Length: 68
Image (spheres, rainbow, N blue to C red):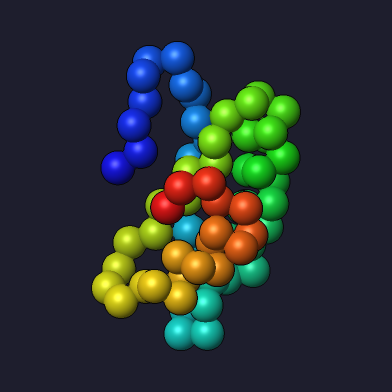
């Protein structure tokens, strides 16, 4: 769980996936979220729920998530 000292307003995105990886919409959200987070000098936090998602975590990090 990301730590928040009360001064951060991190940008959070909820990701969706299928067997082949993150959906196109999720990848687009990561890109837009990263732009917003950079402008606000905040972190981009990606949320993905499920089981055995190591490859999705790597993919989310590749597309700009600071924390997953």
